[in-house]
View 1 (cartoon, rainbow, N blue to C red):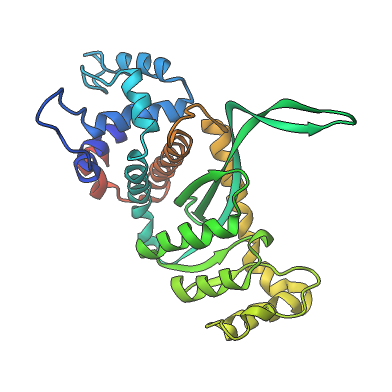
View 2: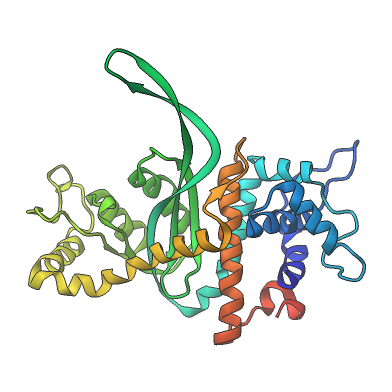
Length: 319
């Protein structure tokens, strides 16, 4: 909390894209909204209970929250607002930036489910009739993390049925390219087994794609892509390492992909595996808030154990 109170007032004005109208009440500072929303995500509480905690922190003897803190209704509106999503993406990237000083990264990506309290109707075909039953709604979080620092680079949340291949090609890789991350190796599981993904990783990111082929694969590059691939030599070299000597050379690099599973388990254990907000961009924003909490946790751990300098983020007070 002390680190957030030092960090958020400095980055709030930089991330805030809201316009103040000529009339009406003044807009609540973004730093105060983010502070309350992060407590809501960290504790996995309802907005009303979070307001009670913020009111306690606003006591003059504690002073970790302002006297005029946002109420639970405004807090919930902020978390569900679609315009909050790009702000949280920028804050997630900002909390990862100190890890860049460690040099080229080996990153891993995967998807995981997040449940909600809402139920969807689905049809079950019986012997002579069709009945309607309730099924809990699920979302899928697609994340990419650095296997050395455990920091999260990017997260996208979709419906449970959205293809992981589509998300990584249309959202995750373009964001990694736009933020100019120095990626050396990209580890993905067999669900991303596609020549297009390997080629885009090598071409756009300049990274080595470690994506396993199927057990019965006969060629490194699938037939429709053989005349379109730009990095055929690199893909063939990885395929040779995958097939030769029972893939020992390939597995020596690929074994670190399991860390993304450890990441999901850590976040769900610490911050909960479900989301409370249902409307608008609430589910995606809640998951982004949980990931920001995780990045802050890893930053403080790296500062304590490895001496990572955080003064550039929140000044000497945060350090």
